[in-house]
Image: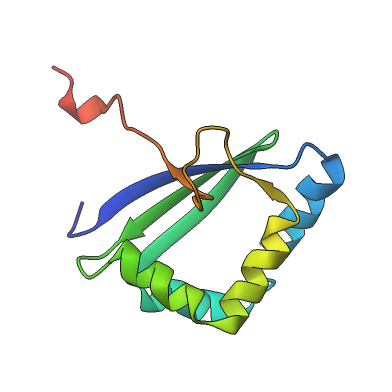
Length: 118
């Protein structure tokens, strides 16, 4: 994959149609705070997309070789602007029932790849 790794993560939105619209509006082009975008790029996340189907969110991330999730989490925890964004997103997001303590976005397990099929 050209030196990148793909990560697929899941999270839910609160079951409130208003939350769906507000969450989408906060993620529209130019609406995400610059500090959040800088944090993502500084962590060597080279591409990120979020999809929604009903209340389910799916994040697809492509990361470069220097990506370290623990370092990203530590940097985010120390950044007041990122923490403000996380508090705002918590108004709309709901953790999956099987999420671990403190885990918001849960990694999905890949169970099929076409290029691995005969």
